[in-house]
Length: 173
Length: 381
Image (tube, rainbow over all chains, first blue to last red; front, side):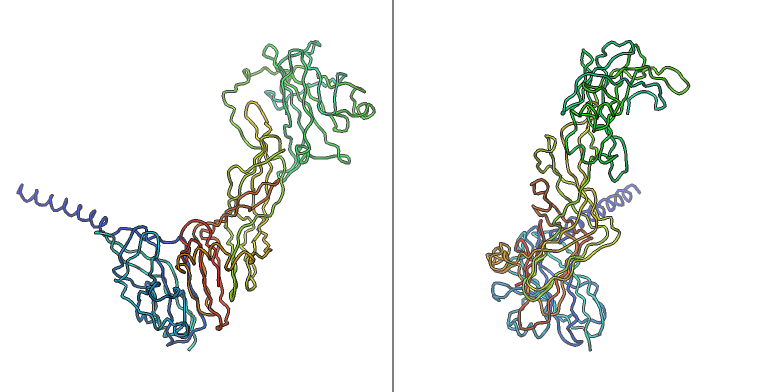
C-alpha cells in the first residue's frame, strides 16, 4: 500500500517535471516578431493564377528552420508550397508580393527553390535567406490569410512563432 | 489671496500712503495697527490671469517684510504679464496682500493697484488711483475677523518648509507645429499616414531656469489627439517625402514650490493635439542614391529590399515610433517628437499600375520590414 503511494507520488512529480521541461524545451521564443501587424493586399489578380508572397525573419539567436505553414487559410486558397530562396546565390532581391507574370518577368522562375529545412538564420537578421509562399486563389472576392507559423531549433531547444503578416486577395474570375 | 485662516474674513483696511516706488518694483512699509513697522509679514503681489481655464487669481511674486517692515516686490516680466487679464483699455489690476500674526491673532491688509499707477507711474495717474503722488505703497494691518465677528486666531504655526515640493502652474498657452511623421515614397507609388482617434505623440519639454531668457530640452511628455476623430494625410504624389505636421497646444508653466513660492524656472509642455494636420515640404532631394538608408541597404547586399508587383498595397501598423529631432521648435530649441504608432497609426504604400517599372521597398536598419528601433521609413526605388 505504501509502495503504491510512493509510486503515485513519483508519477506526479515526474509528470510535473515533464510538463515544465516540455515548456522549457519546446516553447523557446527566439524569433523577433515586429510589433503590430502588416499585410499585402492585391486586387490585380485572377482566380487560378499563382501569387507569390515573401517572408523574412530575424531571430534573436541563431536558429535552424524545421517547418513552416500558413495560418488562417480560407478554403478559397490553395497553398502550392512554401520554399526557401538563397538571396546571395540567386543574386536577386527578395519578393514581397508578386503575380505569376512578374515572377517570370523578373527572372524568379529560374531561381533554385530550397526546402525550408535547409535554412539556418543568424542571430539578429535574415541572413541570406527568405521564404516564399506560392498561393493560388480559387475563389473571387476578398479573402485573407492571417499569418505564418515558423518552427525552428536552436541548439537542443525548439520553438515556433506566428507572424501576423496578412495576405489579402480580391481577385476576379 | 490673503493666506488667512478664514475665507469669510473682513475688516481689512487699506492705507496706501507715501514711500518710494520705481519703474521696476512696488515697495513700501508694513505697519501694525499702532503704526509700528512689522517684520516678517508675508507680502504677495497677485493679479488675475485669463487662460483656457477662465479668469483666476494667480500669485506673481511674494516676499517677507524686513526688520524695518520694508517690502519690495519686483515688477512682473513681460512674459508674466502676457496672460494677465486686461481691463479698461489694457490696464492690469494688481493686488498687494499682506498677512502677519501678532500674539496669535491674524492681521492682514490688502490693496488694489492698477498697473497704470504702479511701477514709476506719473503723479496724476497715482492720484487718480487713490495713491499718493509719489513714493511707495505702505500697508497698515488690521485684525482679521471671522464670520460672526470673532477675532481670527492663527491656527498655523510658523511656515513649515520641510515640504518644499514643486508643482507647475500654467501661466500662458500657445500653439506649435510639430513634425509627426516623414513618409517616403520614390517612384511608382503613393503613401498615406492614417491616425486613429487615440494616436499619441511624445514631444520634448523646453526648460528655462532663468525666467525664459534661454531654453533647452529637458524630458518629454506624451499627448493624444482629443479631436474625437482620426485623420489621414492625402495620398502623396509620386516621388515625394514630405513632413507631416500636427498642431499642438503647449502650456507655458512656472515652477512653484509649496513653501518658498514661484521660482524663475519655466517650462513649455505639450498639452493637447488639436487634431489638425498638414503636409508640406519634399525631402526627396535627400533620398535616392544619397539616402543613408539606401546606402546601408546596399552595403548589406540588398538584404532589406523587396520587389512588389504593380497595383499591390502594403500597410504597416504598430511597432516602434519614429523620433524626429526637430519635431517642434521653441525659442530656437529643437524639441524632439516621437510619434508612437502602436495600434493607432497606419502607414500604407500603394504601388501604381505601371508594370514597366519595378516597385521596390526597402526599410530602415537594413531589414525589411524594419524590426528594430526607430522609424519604419520605407523607400521605394
